[in-house]
Image (spheres, rainbow, N blue to C red):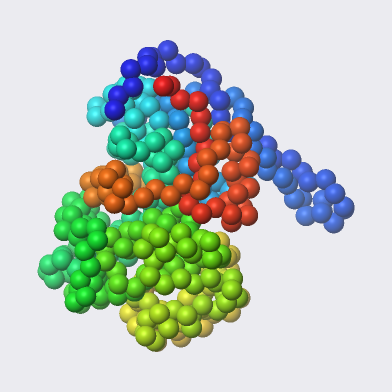
Length: 406
């Protein structure tokens, strides 16, 4: 879909969500800790310029996804990569305001950003943009780039999962880090097909041994990334998909998306490994997807099967572990992996976007996979949007909207 409204006359300034850091007033004990409050407000910022030598295009932002990294960045705990916009927002959807080689003025696009999404305009490399299917709104599209690409990356670029139909010889070549390899593998695994005698697999290093992924544990499964992971694991036909979340309401959402087993980690006071073993006939999970970190380390290790892959991609439960028995990792031969997306180099991010657009975006377009929107706020309500994430109230994605050309 191409919008015909003229976008050529661009202003020198734009509206953007900015951070106001102010000292907290209160008792001396509070002030002594130099605590601050971080309020968001809609203010003015300089217009970004699309640099043609870097193959950038300018996007008029209609919607931007809200992410946990935004909560950290506004507090100075997760700075953007060097050279990136200091405005919050790693993903946005909108209308092209200055043409590139692939996308033309008026095209509807979504983009993976290193920053700048919380603004009326953002400049981004064209290779990090994808077309918005006609079946998706701007708000739905804004919920895709950071969360869905992160989920896709964790499974295929980090853990190295390959569908069961992939030839055994794949384990003797390079991991599927290129768009072509991952795309060819995923296109052979259609949504809804489950085989009882075959599972997706990872390769055990240079030995070429296939390690079947028969089960997966997904923490924070009702989050934006979590809801994507549940569905992508279903797409891969992993037989046992265990969703972990902090409320029964969140878990019911996960069940509708394809989770086969549910664990309310609050109800079991964080001691979830026994439930995991019950769900896996005492074996533990072959794949663990963990955005929690420190507070779950011991239970996670106990939840893993022999030769399990454990992917750590966040630290909601802290970054320092007071006491952890490494013997569990050695005894079970656990592969402990970690990754972030925003700091990856441009070629990696462009390869990821190309692979995702080819294999997963069509399934979002035809509703085989679903974007789960929790709530939509206007840009002037950004503070309320952040509070919803800070209180862990969201089920799915929180999105901000800006006025958009009709």
